[in-house]
Length: 400
Image (cartoon, rainbow, N blue to C red; front, side, top):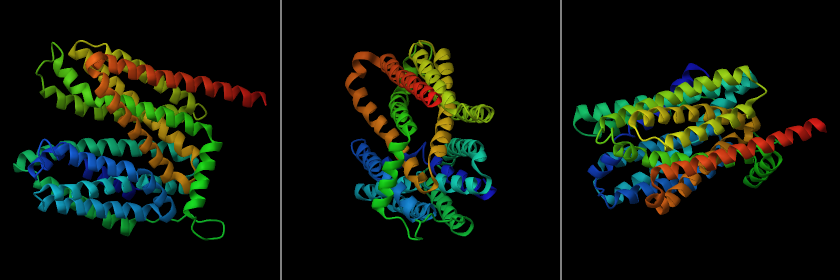
């Protein structure tokens, strides 16, 4: 990746990070109530959910740069509306444009920069580029979260967060227009691929590459367990005997989790570079170890063990996600990359959605530990099954 590409990637994540710690508070201060806040957030989530895959298809068909520029414009419009509105109808429009911006940016920028790196340096750079993107994304989100919380506290209101987000997206728009070049993928006759042809090509790719099915199933269960942990880890920690009421540690734990994900990204990079022919084994091993970490995490009754296991879980998330991204991109042709990346994000959201429904039904019966234990069993069972099936397929290929 060039320095310009790295700066754009980091700036995009930074623009999201500065809103993360205060978004709900901004919405409440702009006209939402405790009753209407979930509605606004639901509109945002539904917009992202419905447009996640279509935005990836648009990026592959009409250009990743074009779709990302649309994302920047939508984000700027949402910032303008958020700055001036003080009523619920305005917040609904804000949620719609924020959802559009999130959906259009998902996969388009990543696919654009990966394609450029592969064309310039070949397949050998995939591990390095993917790990670099993961580090930039996680680091910029973490830094943005810290900056967002600090400037809002310093200013005494949240308007500066909104203005800064608008400025960052404006700079992103200009930088992408001026400094990012894209070589469009066309059909054999020099014409752009039709929607029907693109969908048929995607169907054929997924049907002919069993690895996608394995990864999609794993992503679903990853979304499932992530939702259960992110939803309940804070009340679980507060309820511990030696952590009761220790809300200061919540911020420390959140910050540390970003850092250990980055550590996991770097660890995955070095392992995969040393084992270029064992990526699937590394991926399956990561998921099995992750399941074990979640299971041990579910058994913790003290704050120290809780924090240590929480960090182990997130470090393994960093290792596994980097490996997963590399595997997906190694199996995906340039013309389908944004669509496949968006498909991954969509499946992750479906897993989270299913976990939300199931959690609401069983949480009072099995408590936090039971829910996390169940998520660990599901993820571990999936990883073991994928490992077994892939080994059988490998043996058959060797025999043939």
